[in-house]
Image (spheres, helix red, strand yellow):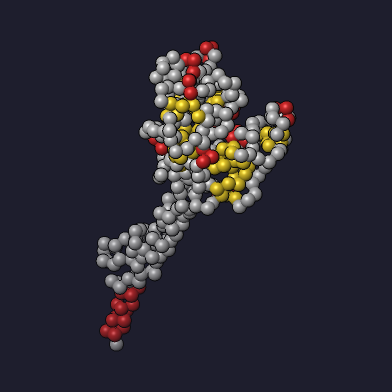
Length: 343
């Protein structure tokens, strides 16, 4: 009897101490490893292969899962493009309605639309707008057009052109400056907009060219203003340069009178768009202003003509499909409908 009692006591002690038969939890969590002293692998497989739904699981749909559409996801929340290199901020996405001073337009990412800023500059009253078609909206302190349509491309969202009284999408997608034709530069506006911006766009004052980072000038002397970089954008303030902000001087806009060579008679913006050089592609009044084998042509129909090689497939941007422009390629050649990256 005493022997039986001692045997039962020993078995009870063995079970209480756990012995070699360990009871494993169903989920060992993030830090589970192969336990060196028992040879047991926990059920969830540890950090890189578990099925427990924890922060390290391949199916947890967390920030590292590749299926949540987040910034580090393998599956983006929309299909991007050269024009729209990243998905629009959800706060700007629209169906039709936007806040005052904005308009709902296609973003270039699939069929997603977003709000774009429209209108003129800052104002305190209507007199600051300088255009009878505009009035000062005091709720946002900006000049907004009061009549439908457009009179010039200044009335349109950047990248759109005024054609026949309506704003037409002329955003030419680009990955770099080489994708843009003469007279354009590749610029990224916000995170989700990248396209070739026309440099010699119409302007009335320097503020019309702020987005391009160049001053407003009249390079061909015809009385119509065009945004035009300087031949010397680093000139001193005291020499009459246009100052964009404190410490940033853009210099005087280039004028054709500074270009005295017959082979390079006009102001030609360089590809990056912040400096001009004397070249063959630039603003003109007549063909006499241009180099031999070049002609003076108004490719935008807004009274701002430019020197281009003779011939070509188009004479006006309105002849081209949307998101294309009539222009001369930087690779050479007469004007053609240019579609930028991917064409």
